[in-house]
Image (cartoon, rainbow, N blue to C red; front, side, top):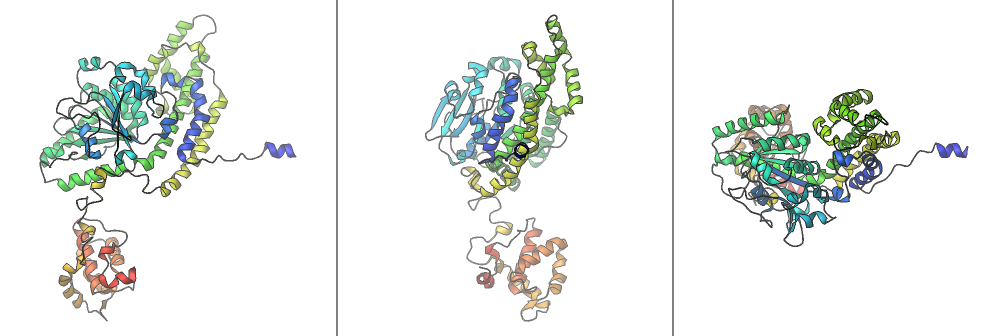
Length: 534
């Protein structure tokens, strides 16, 4: 009986101090053994180490020369970073990781990849030609407390430039794209042509489409009519390269600290900038979810890779004809993919690139591959089916406890929230904030006559009386209901003279195109009601 109980004892669910810690342990215990056995690193990606999991969110900027990548970073940081150069010519000729540091310094590539505290050690595989064009810039900046930026050389056109690099630019971008949290593709409103190399870069990273954000920079330098045409031309050019089924979001604006050349779209550009900044600000709070998502994608690819390698091993002859069989298997690799897909019910999207896989297989001895180990696959399947789900349940709890801690602060991110010049400040529902007088009092005289016509009883009008006048605004009943709930501050089902003025003020705000809040801000509470509310 005792043995039966021990044998059927439910295993205790592992408890992790954090989601990141859980992801780290699941990778090392469940996925890493499968990757090691089937040489995953030789075909797809080097093994992950602690620095990959513990790294701050990274933002990778890509674009052709002189589109404003370096200026964009400087605009966010509100200061120069070590090694920065800006100019109309291709000034950034290297990959630069801009990180938090106690002192301003620049670490050259070979020294940077030797530091185990950073996740850049695998970059050594791209050779000295690349490492001579890679560096880490460290500096004190509040923005960098939560995020890291990766500036890149401008993508050039022509075969000559590609040969002169001395390293495979697209492979470097692919390695970075797998690890970053956000990829920003910058375009210049005056230069929308996509060079051959840039098209190759976009094709390389489009598998990370959930990370990609498109920015149309220098949009203030064209007229309204030209901007519409520029947007259409950009979508047409991108559509040919990315083959997207849905139109991606494009953020338009002028991302530097100089005056706008055309003021007509100022409000539009400010709103676009705020949306983009909010997206970047939330990266630290979503970092755990992103790493968990990447772990799942990596696990699915590792499983497929194991099936492919073990199948090739099984098909190899034991003695004669090995070379011919290897060539045949490589040439008919698509048949292998189809067979595995049918046998194991795997989605076609989980398979690696056929051409690249065929090229890599040329350099391997199939007889040294390992047969399929069901136990390793079972561990990965269990991780995907149960352990990942438990970590997913832990994410909302972590995010709720880190509402403001894991948000990017400082630099340009403070500009639109912490000053009178911030987006929406002094407009709409924010109008009157910080003023001594009640902002509605300025409009109240024009509403008093209407209030008296509605036959108030003991200084108040009923809901039915208020409705007869408020519906003249032609706003939907759902909006008018929200106006009523906000204006009826004392919740007595009637409106006094101040509350009536407030209701009309809120309607005016909505008719001007602004949103209404869920709760009434303190500066809009009628003076006679403030003691009761507080």
